[in-house]
Image (cartoon, rainbow, N blue to C red; front, side, top):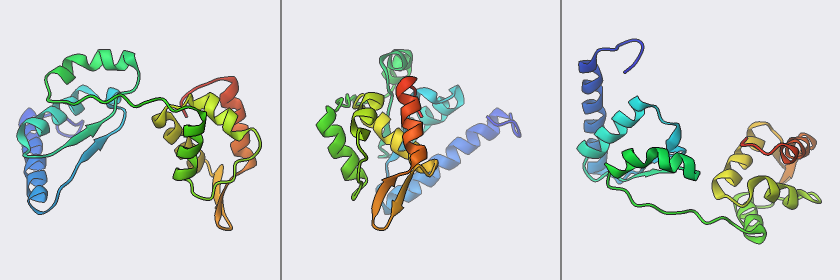
Length: 168
């Protein structure tokens, strides 16, 4: 339901149109819908997602829910759907380092970077990815002469995050 058109019939018409469009695409190719941080969806988003799961043929939807609290809050919704649950393993420091270097080939880590980065992310793959994305958005992690480099402001961002851990 949108602010422009709160009419429930228009909303249902939109749901059916989107479902038909996805079915048409699926006749030509395979697709997967990916939703990160499922726990941030609104009730309207859940209505649409539930509708698509019930009415669209053969469409896999991949979604992530992080944290036990969010998972418990979502249990009612998840129990009504056909879902497979996979727990992402927490990575140790060496695996976090490999994940980082595989994600950013050519990355040269400054001294103490890996220890700080691991202490902030605690080895959670989603958090590692979020922090890489955050550093890229802030131009704190840049591609220079064939390698990834952490700019001084990136070191400042990470140092502040180490003092007050938070999501980027």
